[in-house]
Length: 559
Image (cartoon, rainbow, N blue to C red; front, side, top):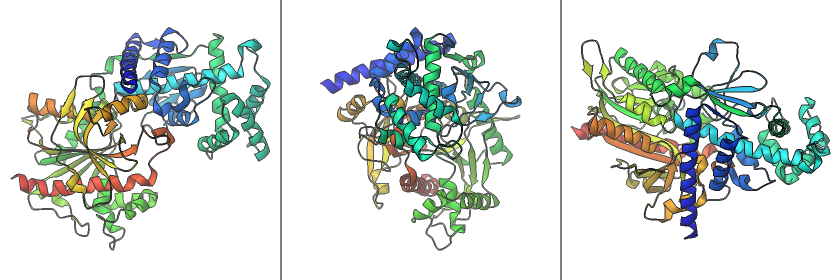
């Protein structure tokens, strides 16, 4: 009962948080230290997401969560009190340096010493993602400020903080002794042990900035102190252009038009098309990596793909071979950040791959595109499935199958396991999408990978889930096996296109499969504990292999 009560509180807090963020977005700005910012902080603390660890504990900074957030925000965000969320508004034509977060496909610009611009091109989910991370960042910054500038000291920085300031601004590489002394001081400010700070120091460091942790902590505290003294108050601003474009498929429409124009230019637009939403490497490598080592079974030996994933030279070599043999790959220029690959199966030579392509399937086309982000999935799929308007006629795309592969959090099992959804349940709404998945556990029986089948939750944000709400979805009659961010959005677009608008056949094959990137119910297994690494290679290529085998057989069986 306690779990369910807590889950209900969390659900309500998540809904309130999204309503609040949406209101602030249309209002155009808010101050993190103001009433609106305080509301977001209180809601986030109420939710207490697993990914943010000890965020809700006063005077104890969350280091893994901090690293997770900073990997998804632009370098230097901790130094800038003013954050502007904009659309693509022409800053690339100026002399501003582009900044790309380590683990998010978004373009950012450091405008001056105090302002960071972040381009939002992926829809509302990206706005929610950024605001959630910034709210966490400001909670941690205020913890640092309260320790560095204690109220009973009249706001004067402590001696320890002054020592940290020297280290942060020194510029020269620290000696081992200086580093360890600095980490002792840092531990006092962060409420962490020396051992924890030493481990964090190595995680945060980079070849260009080995002492990065000191700078991050110093600027978080400094900017928060300036805000509290109203010397330079932090502010989040949303541009009017961004507010006009959100929800209108501005970038998704441009992306889909470019894809269809490419199909028309290649004279492939009237052929049967198999859509695959995945990545830019697994299909290509399965079809062409046998050229690297003809003696290796490219379908069954997943060790080959581990080698390729660690070798940029091999990756380039395979891409060059694939393009010579007919692969058409083009980078997205619409602003959607979704690259595309097109394979004309008629020109594909599968000798040496281990795959068999039947005669009917040879007339088909593979359309592979990169991962979407949250609500962006509805935007791009909805636009892609619309008919092509030519000068003399309108051509409805002949979509034979839609195949969605992605990574997701698992609720039973561990990293690298596979999940096959039978329905997508959209968190916080009454929108539920049951469907017949053409992938089943039986398809994976001959491989040594655990596979789970059942309903999956499409969450409003992976960084807003706690154990109570996840246990509720797992242990009640929902019997959910995992959580992700795009499934319900894809399925909404597919059902609208097939059942309402008549753009595609309702009989087309649907295939959804996810591999587990984390288990948020296990301590130390959340996304903030680290990425999949090499563990993700086998399930990624196994899912891709099964999807391709189905496609290569499907056309003939459906005739």
